[in-house]
Image 1 (cartoon, rainbow, N blue to C red):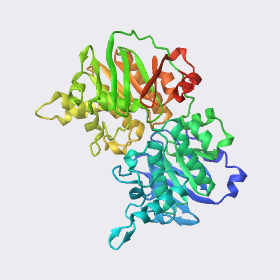
Image 2: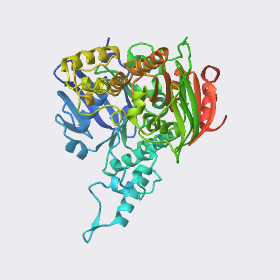
Image 3: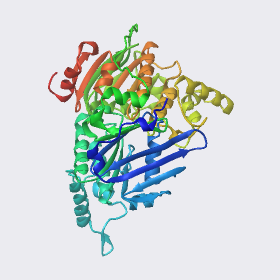
Image 4: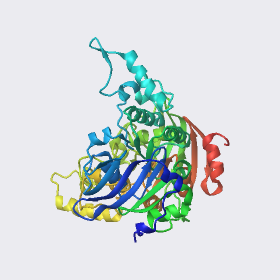
Length: 512
């Protein structure tokens, strides 16, 4: 049941004295069925970091699109810097000082930092780009957010954290007074997340109002001043962060207590089903070896940017390692072949689910049955059969949407991830699988569901390799943990015999 908004705690007197940059008044949104947003009211104030939280499907993304002008509200009013808007457009939002950095980056990797920051606005002199001026302008934009990045550097050579800073610099340069950040640290390790946190704090100190969307509740308590929680399209909590604790925040998000401790597993661990022996790839991974048995979950843990990120392209067949051997069920796997990996029963799920796994533009039904259709290779397609099978898989993996068979892009991140799990892992011909950051960018409720799916895979006798930068998730799921730093494999331990503090020390280099 959604709480009565009149019973909610109100921001402190100190917060109320600061000028609202954004005020939402009675925002509602309907897509023709149940309300996606219902009577949403809250303020975001100058110089404060305002966390916007909620489960997948709670309405966060819809609300961000309404504020940025890319989606019209059904009713209600947006007040930006004192100016009321009943109809918002992207141009109006931009003119009013609204900027958004989405979880999916919009940078062009082959271009330089300066070209990305000044996209469409490169200075020209005598008919040619004035690169000296361009680098100066981009450097000033980076300096404004306290980011030390060479504007001449190619973006695809930057780490994930610094790519995020380039996007922020580009938006701030345009005069943003309200910056919305959608999961800016979802795929970052602790060190890179701190880099982003420092920039966000600096922007707030400069008077920018920030809406910060995150599923990492620890960073909400570390970073945010205020928090608004959406549940089923309603505001169920709107308070200063200092006035609540973790248990209250979780209860507001899911409506009940969520237990995340390790569940006992009694899997019968069998023979080695997946083995990587002395795998190396220049600048990415060096001499990596691991063996995973049937029914076992082995985690490869490291900070973002470490060797675990190179496992997906190698094991999925997208690329070949410089050296080393991969064996699946005792047979040597042909390297550099996606088809060979699939035929051998290897399934790999990337953290970039829309880039590697799901097919934009197709429906949920088409996506969730795509692999089975490809394997069947039938001359004719039965859309009725596809529809029935898709419904079965949606129910099995609890895929939730407002419509019966929407486009895959319309689903929340957690539901997209469940579609991908259904697509790759539903059939019995799965010998081994790699899950790369399987709960990246999903809420705590979807996270618990996905954890159960991972455990079910192991109970079916699948050899599970978990590539992650999330210490708590690894301790929650893994039987064994292999720790990597940079390109090197530095430690191995049994999960039940290792404390969180010891594991963090291994990852950061304090203990091996």
